[in-house]
Length: 114
Length: 111
Image (cartoon, rainbow over all chains, first blue to last red):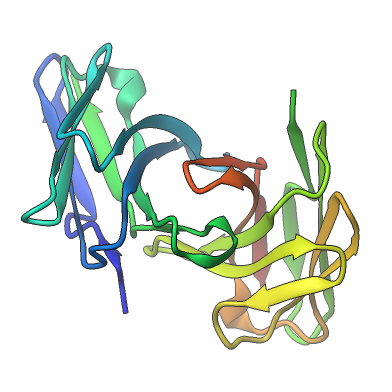
């Protein structure tokens, strides 16, 4: 039972264009959402997050949008740069989950082509 | 600041051999610690978590086990490795439901 789903395993975007990574969730109790970036052979690093009381959070080139009614969030990267090539994980958490669990999606591999 | 140490970075083990991966956290006390696995083509699967010494919760039935012998130490073990145990193992510290800090990971290849 996947509570957090990233249906696109990979995405290729031209350098300078916008990258849009999508994520869907099923648990309506989730109230906090995070995006992590992972390079090969390294641990994931935090990128950006959003609380369920907001519908948008922006940090430089990265913006996360949340549509609670659709249980959908997306990460926009603009403009895309070569260093953005990595695997991106969407994650969600609930204040009602035990032991501070954060549930991760399956990841989307983003490739930025020149 | 908090630091998560995880070792070894890479490991190649034959089928049927034992496994021990260690994770230690510095700069905090009584941390909530987690083991995740990233298998080929799959996401980050939560394997175990621990809220304190000797307290282990398992998320999925499997060939692995975990132990928390000390406050800031979390160990992932197996008595006999299977080919399907291959993957990238990550230790994480979650201070709250809104933050997760990961170690550098261990690439395990079972041959």
